[in-house]
Image 1: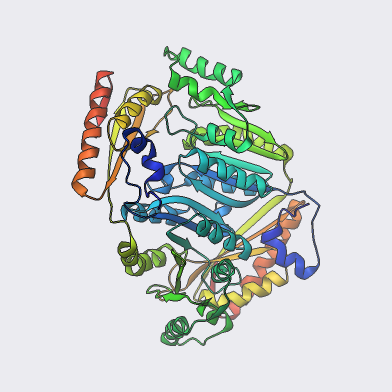
Image 2: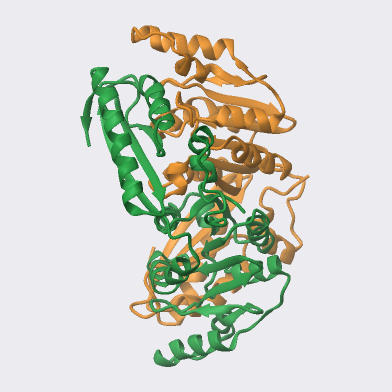
Length: 286
Length: 286
């Protein structure tokens, strides 16, 4: 059994001898971004941040992101890596459309060792979309209904290409389109309810403190101290260089089965931080 | 010898029997992003897009991106994956600062199987920075000068933490800070000249065409045709859903040893596309 907070909280729990190992059995999530346009820097990967946030708030630990080109083997390799690493949830974006370089379904089928086949439900979805628009069903349009064997198509209310949902061993795999509006709608309508159902039911609480007047390297030992004395995770983000004015954001997070506990931890840690920083002559903007 | 355009151009070259295999020996680049803040969606990974664009314009093929948490083993694993895959260049961002969770140097040392040690040159850089600011050298500040054995420190003109440059077998590894301004300055001042020197010296040309009035699924066979008849790569990006108005961006790219050749290819392909799209009643905005 894996600890869902294994990385983020390990040093806290280890130091305190407190562990929630086994409490919630492995809620690692991987996000796979598919598309050359992301790799060549033509498009900024906002889908990733949006999904990372959603998954975190749902109590999952986003363990890794992978960005791969429109290539069947590369796509398959990414899914295989995530499955082997024991991901509970894998979410991919991109590569579901009608063109030659939309290869996610084929890559996923390769990863799972199953055939790509015309999915009846997906075909009905695609057929309906084009019938509404009075467009004929061409080979390129039918392609969008070819899913790995065993897949459940995810309805696409905004666009045309259905998403793909497959449960493989203990891993829930969701392949969503790359167009942000389609992806977000499908996630919220279809994926999120499933993730809540199979998820860890942990509450994630966060808070940011902006400090002024102290370099990050001076704050570093304070962070160490507060993290030793609480059950939060604190990450510092210098907002300008240490050359100019010292502005550092301290991002405090905690997760717990009980919302009040996580809130209390964040509040206490925040108070300790503020006290120490003021002691050193820094100013605070919460 | 690997073909630097193996993925992007493979189908074109295969169909034409034209190959540039061996012409330039393997210019794959991997980008590794280190930091929980990216995984939890607190920060959008703009560094990735910036680096992807830079590397592409320098003629490298950005083959994969990996986003990993602030965890030594995860960081080490990402570097190992990239080296095993035969990357010519690996660029990481993040994890070089003074706090406990800045673990890139240690992760990279683990990946390379070398010790972390106080680097004399890096120590001089760090010492100078703090002397200028009249700040003492604490343990957390000295930490930034601890690099994997054999590393060359990269000067950080904006912030404090030096970057890391290591050549391992045939792979050039650059670890840069996560603060965008520091990262970009260090890349342009230090990394880019090296990448030009060891790089493929290919010219990358691109062009975008915006089409209106035709769904992506109708354009798909046109793209197939033009790609069969030219040496460009075309990727379509639907700008709205197929339900509303049909707007599709066609992004045409080509690389060549001679700039004129790449320009010519893009120009010809663009002309073919426009002709076919107008034939179907679509309008064009170049």
